[in-house]
Image (cartoon, rainbow, N blue to C red; front, side, top):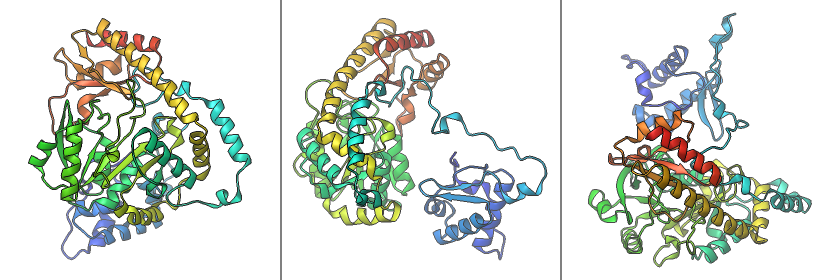
Length: 473
């Protein structure tokens, strides 16, 4: 559980003559003891807390270190600093201290049954586990001690070479292995880019509505988020120039906009690339699920167009294969290669090697391409089943746009119901979905749901729509 809201609300004002270190130590310790900051709660990063409190980050780091030594805080690599579940005062009492249990969803071994309409999960039941196991077994038998010893900060070279070849053939992107970094997922890619690219106060265009994980990553880096509306042609570039002419960077999902599902028009792509190149603005292209286009070939990436050498390209295998693989990649423009390598050395020496080796062989042997072709057909059929069921059971209540890609679709409400009310009714009926307006930044005109169709078969889709119809009609 993360601490929500400004942490300064948990502190009393500093008294005259009190040092900043003493004040912060006293107030933070007291807030923990009085449960104003709950046990187990993850605190804001030191940089963010320093901005909130208007004090030096060094003071934050010093106080965090002191409280950690005394047992009030716990620091874990990759998980941040959190309040201990039991603090020293707990052991002075003979009474058993009640520690609230973690929700089941936070247990990594806990998994709820798949049901309609799980939003971002791929069709895991269709994954070729036996093929993956054969490839993994062969790789393990040939494993060298060098692999066991460590790896490159950018990732396993044969995997990066295989990704470069794949991007050239399927996405029209001319890049080389030296520009590719392996990460654990899109969220880590965004975190790395935000740290390398932005400084506190830098402006960043963000699609509205858009991916909340990107908003979180850049806000944590101190960026100022500039909402730019999305219409039927994608990001409204002209509107972006009106509200903020020279942002530090622009984040967008041009091939299949999340969550509205539209594709950025070619005219806007060219306009955006020419404008950003001229102004020295970096572009972050999140290509999160473009492999799954059901009509024709995948749309070429912006990074593959002319004058696009200032574009970061993000991709992931966690959606195209399976989420627990935890492997993704980013293509980094040349000016940022050295800063990115330095950052990776500071935060993660190298990504896990064995899974990278297996994935590299999976790509090189042609299994990845075969899997994608099969899943495009399956997902296309499931989307068609969802569209047909909505027309039959939810006519005049929900409207699905004509999307041609991805794992999910927006469903716009037409009965006057709000996203929040529809989501609450759907959840009570046992239907999984997301309220569409939770992805809005400044817009207030979005009323609908986000429905996933990739993880369930046609029969489950029809049952889910019937449940949704009883909830919404």
